[in-house]
Each structure stands twice: as C-alpha cells, then as structure tokens.
Length: 116
Image (cartoon, rainbow, N blue to C red; front, side, top):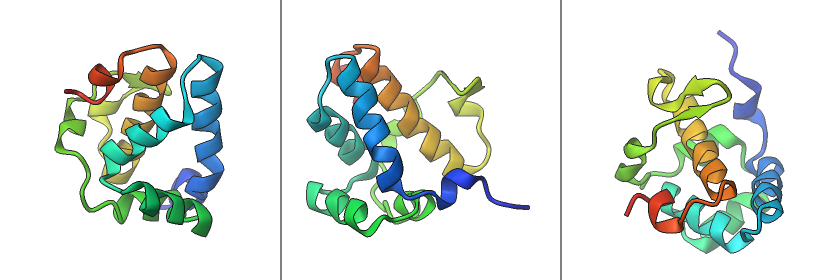
C-alpha cells in the first residue's frame, strides 16, 4: 500500500498554511505554535529545528514522543471525515492537528482548543 502524499511532505511546507489560515481570522503565529507544542510536546526550539530541517510530516509526528493524551478528546470532521474514526494512527494524528488549527481559525478560545 502506498503512503498518502501528506506523509512525505515537509512539515515546513504545511506550517505556513496553518499560520496564514489563523492570521486571516485574526489569530497569531504564536497561537499556532502554542497549539503545535501542546499537541506534540515539542519545545519551541525543537519545533523550529523541525521547520529548518524540513522534516517530513510522518517523521514530525512519529518523533513527537510526548503527544498530549488530551488529544483523544478532539472530535469532529476534517476533510469530510470524523477524526475520531480514522484508523491509520499517523493520519489520525495529522488530522487531529488540522482540526486544532481549524478550531483556532474559527475563533474558538485557546482554553477550549487545548482541552483545559
């Protein structure tokens, strides 16, 4: 079975789209970074290293060894698919992150996005 092309795309190529999506709705790059750090457990420095290295999305997720356990509380639809029903683990993690950025762009409070 061939991998989905998102796996081989660099996270650095997707990241600016996350930031643009947020900024168009009056949110900030700092909020995007906070969400990514909350989700992955990466420090800001580790996030920036992955961006500089142009780490592929699959590796970016796999190397996030401190994925936030509260991510399992993320529910809803992204790309027409319920994120909680996605069976392939890496794809589910990628879609969880997409869903968090969508929530940010829709104006949801950070406390709710971060499931606190």
